[in-house]
Length: 179
Image 1 (cartoon, rainbow, N blue to C red):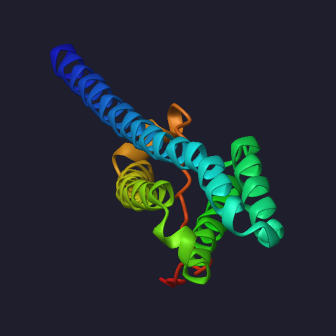
Image 2 (image 1 turned 180 degrees about the horizontal axis):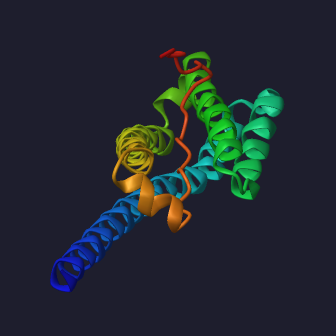
């Protein structure tokens, strides 16, 4: 009888260790995915001053747009909460695209080699950022689902695993699902 209890106890311990390790792996995947996003955001932030300078030389009367983009970059770097950073990054992305669109009004800027290189670099960064956001949100979805479903929920609650935040890209609300 004590042998059966010992086997059941060992099976429970092995199962708990397996679930814990899986949760840790998923949590680390979320962290690594966030790191990928952060790298792309840093690349974009480094590009913004160069882009502002290129536009400033041709479109001096667009000071408000240039100042707004610079301020959004600073706000993003100062943001500590993921939701705040995502909101500011969406605004920054729109501001940077507005700077790019200014080129249409300034043919000399549109033909400037430096500006064209910055524009190509921005497109590359945005592509990488979009991929990194999708990967991150997928990792968050997997992690959050795992900590809310049986049997992982038992270990997750016991060891106080917290859900990760999604990195939103727009203001659309998630659909409400009723049970």
